[in-house]
Figure: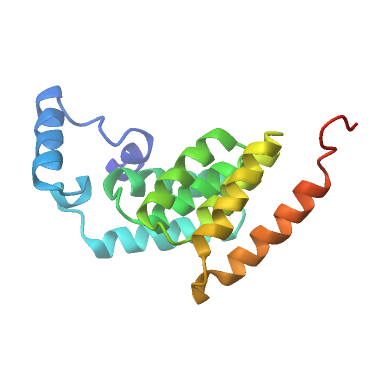
Length: 173
């Protein structure tokens, strides 16, 4: 098994407890990603992202998930890695894990409603309609009048209308 394949399974398997402690210390005190600490280049991360994205587009969600897991481990500050990781978890029906990953992506760009929109999709898949309505309302609010986010805001509004229409309300159903 190659070192890369091992890293996808357990990125910390080759580290002793002392080395992990040193990595954590450096991470916290130097504000670096694990990729930076370990000398993984941005070019390498971009190549892995392209590999993961291609696997995702080809419907190989489990394969893509492994690469995205590696990416979020070694660069926890890149929103597109978290979005890919979350989307793979959503497509493999790991909805709660997807919600967690979308939450991280959302904190990395507070103006982008897309993570909230996809969170709502996961909540609906879990039959948590009230929570989904809250996520959709927040998505619309988050987008505001920002032009780049209006398509996602419109989709959130449409989903909100459909979700509310399916709600029997007090005393219904």
